Figure 1 (tube, one colour):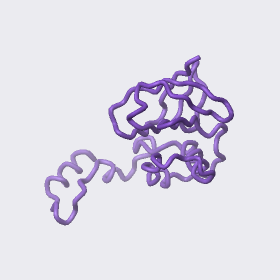
Figure 2 (cartoon, one colour):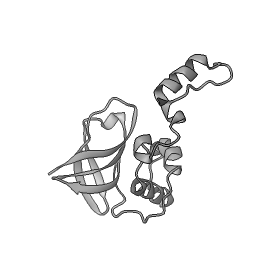
Figure 3 (cartoon, one colour):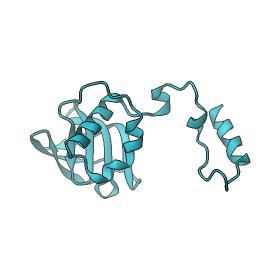
Length: 146
């Protein structure tokens, strides 16, 4: 229903008055956070803890507005993130010989082996392949190379 409403609104909108097209989410009044694809609260807590400690890379600020919408009443996780050059995995959790979390990455690390720091531990991981210039995706599994 929201998709049809957004489509109709975009067909009838005046492009001079409203430059940005409507999205289906603009018409989802009763959608919960899972349906809206908002980041998990634990990821937002980790993001803002990195920002406060000045460890957040400047290129990762592109999702600040999305993170700001999340109520972060919980304590930040430990470790906060796996941090590498062009690679950031928020709130990493160990899963089946790898780690999983919210992946924020630049295109240049897509499919590459990246050296990361997870707390005080250094490791090499293989970043999943993606096409976007900047990526922010939740529940991404990243394998740890030995």
